[in-house]
Length: 365
Image 1 (tube, helix red, strand yellow):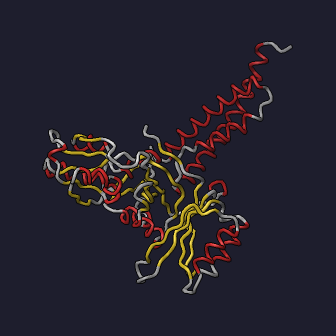
Image 2 (cartoon, rainbow, N blue to C red):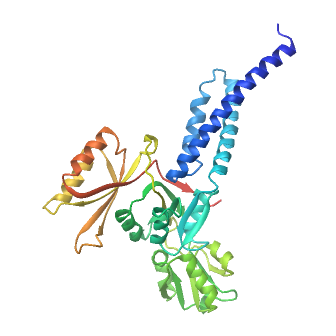
Image 3 (cartoon, rainbow, N blue to C red):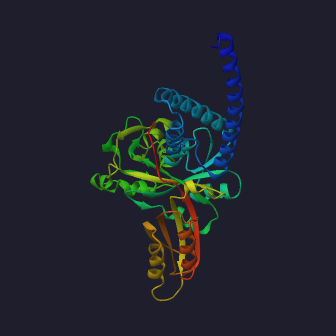
């Protein structure tokens, strides 16, 4: 039987091997961080982490030791995430609006260690990435009540960036005014058109006049700067705290499940199959009878479920339209490649603008 010193020597030898493996693992984490930075992916991927812990835990035969090992893995992955966040602190994230905008809130949750930069419009934030000023842009693409954000869809169609992630943020719209103001004092509300649409019933019930703003947070700024008690903004509660306003009424959006989908745009497309569970497809069809029907038939023929189908006017050609399809599946699979090849026979313009694993819900805290 080994004496204590011999056992300790054996542990020291194992620890030395583990140190070398730990260093190799952290180097791999560094490579992962570089990939995530290039493709606009967040550090934390809950589904991936859970799958790794479950799979690797099964390698331990002893049930008693397995529980300790899964705790060890969880701690190891926490260290890996911390290291990746440190490496990605320089990641530059563009968003449209000013501090307190829902896009800024979403961006801060997706990239908590990144540097956030505000831009006055969707196109300016998009161009900041395509021109190399920023690494990624976080832009809204759709609201569960007010529908698509057409300006961003148009940027997808005309631009060169790729969507590598889609995130859901529960939106709570609030009526903000100057301190001391009452709802009875308010005559006009100002906000982004999407926010006004989300609160249309509330606005009508109170007979408010409407003014449009480029952004909800900019609307709050405007109320703070004009110092007019008859003017109120529709925006997040965060903006009230930022710009010294008071919340006259909470949750004034008509839909209790009011949710906005935000997409992360980057210059590089994902090239790993793990994230190819959904794809975004944009195309125009040939000017012949039945071309759209034929194109949609091709997509379904190869087993791809279309979750969304929308049309948008082509800005550079009167009375011509392009189509936006969001589909489940991997367009780089064998069936996906065949589908795209056949689809090109019916389309004069076709591009896959994004791939993402699945939607992630951003929590409030």
